[in-house]
Image (tube, rainbow, N blue to C red; front, side, top):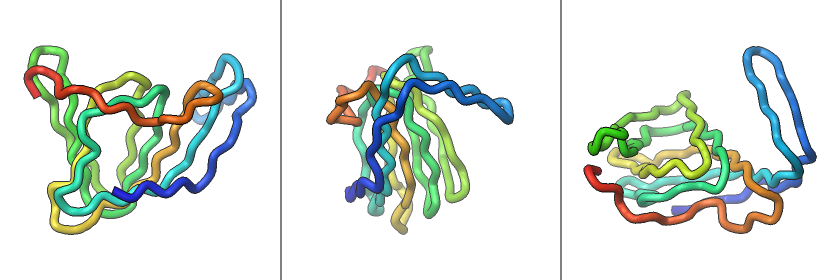
Length: 127
């Protein structure tokens, strides 16, 4: 699955607020902006991220699975024009079950000096 880094930068301590959005960091953070293409049948596998991730789907439909907290697994579909935010440490799997590629952009936020923005984890029970 091709992940293309578009920009990587250091974000100074920040507090930005407006339009019902409140972004606050406690110290310097790293920001990585990527373009990702998921081929039909492709998957990220079960994983987490060290910090929040903002995701916008521009083409296709992404299937997202996560533990539901009740011993089962929740499923959602995210299509072109949709976006979502993942919290750091949030276990999930995203895949392309369709017949056309999925294209998305992801903006990762993490502790300064982070070199790995995706950590593979075992499949949760019930999923």
